[in-house]
Picture 1 (cartoon, rainbow, N blue to C red):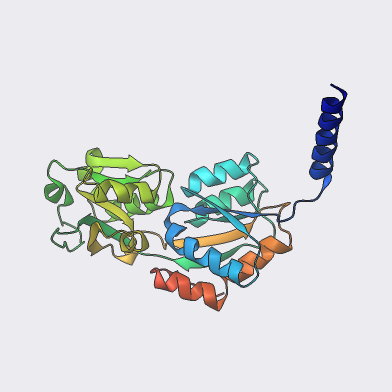
Picture 2 (spheres, rainbow, N blue to C red):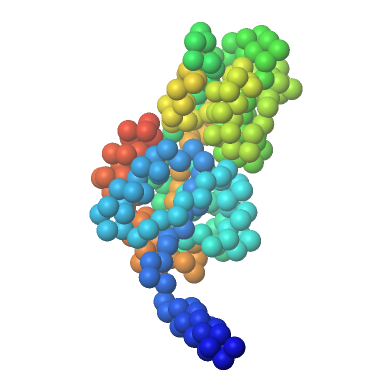
Length: 256
């Protein structure tokens, strides 16, 4: 019995010493809009390969991520798919002053099955007739940037009222993409970069850029977590290597 107690005491001591040691490899946590997944999944390993801090990526709709950060989620960097949610977080006092910058742009497209015929996107295109009994997949139209842009575009083109009852809303733009890829929706409104990441869909047409607000991705460090690692990662996002990766995935790299 005495030997067992001594062994147990030794294990407790070792556990206490282990917990007292600093973490050997702190992680940088980046909250990013779901539409960035394919590009950031390539960029982050490239960043690590050049000696950058290990990065944990968390993807979701920008609205979900912004609310999580406001509630204290441990994000170091936030990359939103529109300025609106970054503005909101800034108003909540959650963005580190001087770290915010617009880094990327995108285009909005109409997608369908891989063998679907193209469609010229103009006022009077009668999207409802083309949908027939099918659904139009979109990200949440009043919360998620892709859905907000998509609704604005359809309203601008005079198509929204006719298709509103046919819209299948998804939590984020990648979920909307998959509804079309899996055949659950006849068409969808997503970013051009999302369509390029999925072989099971085809771009039927591109929305005119003047039919919706400019699609802009701002990035910033979170207040209280804007240490050297967060700033280094933001600097990397502005650099040449990241620009090449983003452009390869269809994003427009904005001048700094």
